[in-house]
Length: 338
Figure 1 (cartoon, rainbow, N blue to C red):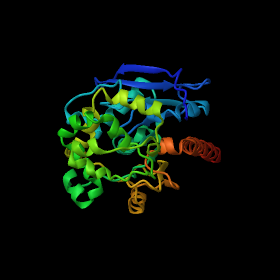
Figure 2: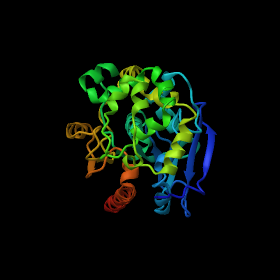
Figure 3: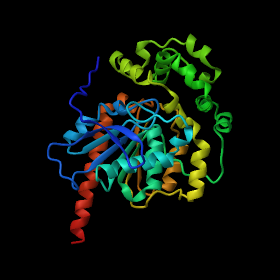
């Protein structure tokens, strides 16, 4: 069993200027210098929490970074409003900016996985001047659209995404809460499960979940990690599922703000994905390159969606080295202009 020591982390609960309370880990390196030590703001996805970064926090701090990892809205020790409108990406990005304000950090490196990847990508549009660099994991960048396409329409076009239409429905909250352990086992499957099951089948309801058997060998979590996630989500699934109920709110906000589809031209962006992750396709990656001038992409062969666990050492080292290389490039460029 792989064991990761999460003891000794600095956990904080603070009320932000957005009037929402957030729980987050705030870990500084030994020789931290305010204004000089780069900060990594790590944003988890669904269904996850700060614990999703457990394999990266201490190694990145040891490399000299300040690492800030919140429970996003609706998760863990953070506020859990009931209304889906509270979970629009504009509001989530305002919360992330407020965390940086609270910590008196002008600019940070934002790193996001899954829904967190979507959130940090949108942060680069809503708050472009607050980023030093951007790292996106598992979900490629998609630009704002001038036309609204509902989740149900998307599910018809791409049946493998029909689970999102199920999550959008309010009934999914109670049904998933009633079958929580099985649901987590289904979600956290490894990319080569012995028991075949399409996640899109969840749309059929609780009777499907009740019949599913997912053996320990088919999931990327060990028993202690699975127990941790069960405890976290026993608090309720409404907040996490509300992210899937925001598509119209997100579209209206972006349309009203006339958000550009292009990320800042000088912004370094790294995208990492697993080749066995069905949420990522070559066409989506190719499309992302059109809107991100400095996009670098890196494939993890034979890995699935949960690369923070499946490829934890590679992820930890790749991102740290990429950021260190950027710092070296910046110092060399500064010398040239002296």
